[in-house]
Structure formats: C-alpha cells, structure tokens
Length: 173
Figure 1: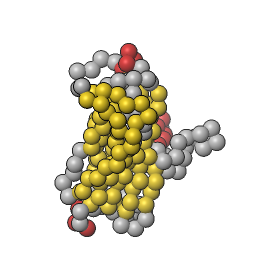
Figure 2: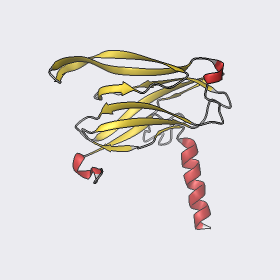
Figure 3: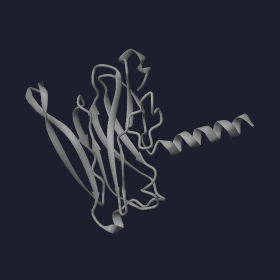
C-alpha cells in the first residue's frame, strides 16, 4: 500500500512539472548542459515551437540545433562586460527559439523530445529560472510562474535549476 501511495504521489508531481530539466542541479561555476524535456503538447495539440528565455548570468550559452527545426536566437547587452580568451564579451544569449520547419516536423502530443542549451553557470549558488513558451498547432503554454508562499505549485511552472555550492556538488567524472 505504501508503495502505491508513493508511486501515485510521484506521478502526480511529474505530471505537474511539464517542461523539466534532465539534470535539475549542477555545481556553481561549472559548464552545464541544460536539457529541457518536453513530455507533451498543448491539450492534445502538437508542439510547433519552443522558446526558452535564459536568465542573466549564464556565460557562453550555445543552443544545440535539431534536425527539422529552425534555430534562432536573440542577444542582450551585458550589464558588466568581461573578457574571454583575450576578447571582450559585451552581450549574452537571451532567448533561444526552435521552430518546426514543416507540419511533418512538429512534436506530436503523444511523443517526447529534448531541446538543449550549453552554458557556464554563475559562480554563486542559488535557483536559476528559465521561462519557456511552448507554442502548439492549437494553443500554447507559457511556463514562467515561480512558486510563492501563496502559490507553492503554480499551474505553469518555470523551469528551475538549483545551482549548488561547488564543494557540495559531489564527485563526478
């Protein structure tokens, strides 16, 4: 009975988090592969575009192209420019958009796929939030709500990455 209750609770939690990260935690200052998992469309309709708004503070972000999808990006100026490999960096990736090229390339509601962005994480630990707009053949979802004391389980939650202190990240190869 306890196993059935635990399984039900886990499934309810998973059903609530609609766009998730493959690895929801990472060490501060590390290179991170943000794999956004898309488990369904919009109320039965296929996904035809996904737009991820990157939080400030990610350095050197680069999206991964997908066959059958057009990749476009938007940049924003940095508040504090920095130098990388001897060159000044004055802007950063702000938004990544993948759009299905044809109706045959859309992501059906019953299918699953992943969309990837690589970046270097901030040096300071804390929560990093990604807003994701999922546009479907009919309708859309804007996954951008952060939990609050009044609304601990928002209907359209933003995607959260927990950046851990570098020493707490554990041993990895």
